[in-house]
Length: 82
Image (cartoon, rainbow, N blue to C red; front, side, top):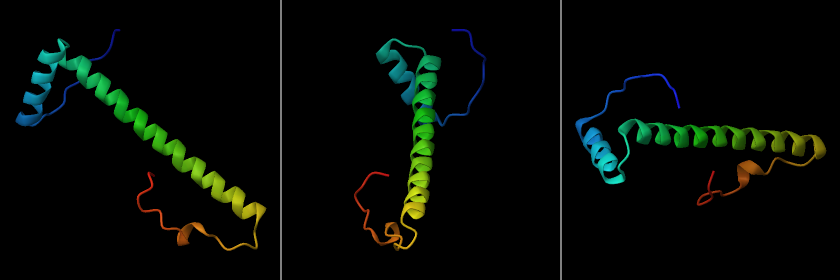
């Protein structure tokens, strides 16, 4: 895959961890960084989709039952994954 070159700053500890992992996996550091970035961005995009789905659900609930009090603020959601 052709790509562009970019540079990043790493702490000495993170650089050492990256080098050890690259050596153990027999992969290049660029490959590891690219996979990690892909996973991070996918999680961010999933979170954005989840937040939008929640917003749409709240709007639909409010439209369907305008006289009902909004319950979500009263729910104890501790321990539930966001």
